[in-house]
Image: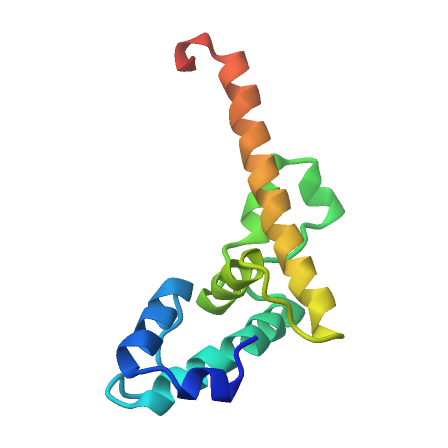
Amino acid sequence: MFTRSELEIKTIPELRDLCRRYGVKPTGSAAYKVSYLTSLMAFPQLALGQLREGRGLKSPGLSAIQFFKGVIDEMNSPTDEQAALIKITLEGRRMAYPDRFDQENLLMHKAKMQKWLLGYSVNRDREDPRLL
């Protein structure tokens, strides 16, 4: 995603802004440039590792689809690194293969969750006229 040379030419305030933009915390002391470099270079791999381990966002099981609340509970919330990877993916940055498959999979999980939540609220509004 970010190359070391791409990040090394940036100042600490620019690196801090990038970390804030993607919701990534610097590793170690925020006074050192290397703390930002490490976090910005590592978060894509960390996010995919968490996805592979079943942490943060994940696909719901078949039984959970029958109960909408179960789906949302099972999908969980994205970790900070997964949220950052989603943001940078939406900006058009892509990882190299084979990690790109998992990167796109993470984005699909996020899109499905938004679609389900939107569909749920639309259907719910139709059922209860007080909510219109």
